Length: 184
Ligand SMILES: Cc1cc2nc3c(=O)[nH]c(=O)nc-3n(C[C@H](O)[C@H](O)[C@H](O)COP(=O)(O)O)c2cc1C
Image (tube, rainbow, N blue to C red; front, side):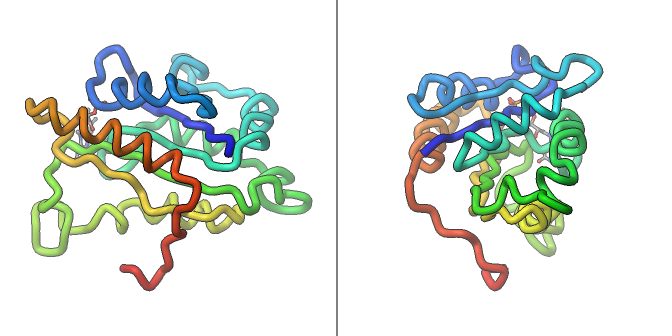
């Protein structure tokens, strides 16, 4: 299985969680990692043909990012807007992503218990991530349950260490179940 990891952090050099994940995933055979900020530069400009060729070679696409204002950092949105074009991802002849898998790997500052009705963040992570889920449905991809690390800025480094090996085994696991809408 070919796995493409799209890492969307504005500055991996100042990151703890996402840099650790990025470096660990980069060392795994069969995984191609791509630092979108390094590729797109300050202007966040992407060459759609290059990005689309990488997507076509992948069976599973991982979008890895820190949770910023209840969404992803803007570089991922810029990449999506410039790459998932008509004729490729949707519209006439736009079937190139059909059947591929999409898996989100997200780190949050907030603790797990804050992401529920009645708590500080009011909504679950699955609810916050629905634009990605619907995008994957729209382009015919199978949306896999997201991998989420909460309290990512915690000083307890053992949690980050554990999450890194869990992430690698999750991302490389051959059979993952697509989430059904009823799971909410
Ligand atoms: C601009 C910005 C917005 C953020 N918004 C959220 C948020 O909405 N919810 C949350 O739980 N954490 C939020 N955080 C915390 C980040 O998710 C956290 O710093 C990140 O996951 C840590 O990963 P890193 O070490 O790779 O940078 C935000 C951080 C920044 C800088």
